[in-house]
Amino acid sequence: MSAQFDFRKELITIIPNLRAFATSLTGSFDRADDLVQETLVKAWDKQHTFQPGTNMKAWLFTILRNEFYTQMRKKGREVQDVDGIHAMQLAGHPEQQGHLDLQDFRKALEMLPDDQREALILIGASGFSYEEAAEICKCAVGTIKSRVSRARTRIGEILGVEGDGDYGPDSISSQIIGVAPAA
Amino acid sequence: MSDREAEDKKLQTGNTQRSQQQQPASGLGINAAIGKQLKAYYDDVASEPVPDRFLSLLDALDEAETASKKNDRE
Image (cartoon, rainbow over the protein chains, first blue to last red):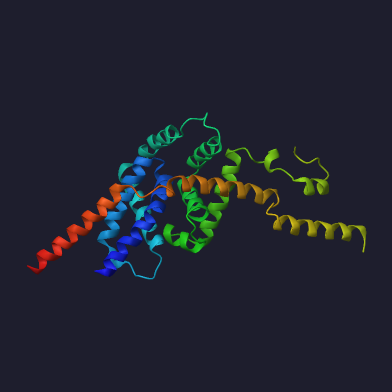
């Protein structure tokens, strides 16, 4: 009974992370919460297969990810296109200063291939190690590393930061390479 | 020490100081900027309180399980 209670309690603490990961996968808040709901039901049914002391967050992310790709296969690619439009619609009001950057970033993230986006989220936001992310995505550690690296490069290109003054040579390296520092 | 060596030394010292001040070189700067945005994007959702629908769902799952166990015993 008390073990049961702990499982539930632990599950609740991980829900915010599951929602954030699901949002990045589906590109839609509504679909993300449906996915989390299905994940919780699945996790509850198979809680006896969870080994206490192991990483429950990684266990739940794996269930959520499997559920997502199972649904994707059933529904086909057209769902994702509709979702891309949906994601753009949730971008909000551009006149809200300070949110501009985040909205641009959200769109850039949506443009990444699924495998690169999920690797970037797992490593850069969910706080998993490369090893854990590899286990969740059922691929090699090196594959995760290269996906994260390609994702970062691609986002940099999309946001146009490559060679941009904001991220260009700083004053010290500019002196060394002999160009004027970016203003 | 040649001028070149002195220059290298200055460069190394400069790099150390910059990393201590958390002002990484340009390549790392892009990654740091992306990392910051990524966190903001993620935390936008992850910082929200757990919606009631999920708490109700877990209650329902819990009750269903308790009920079925009770039925098994009877």
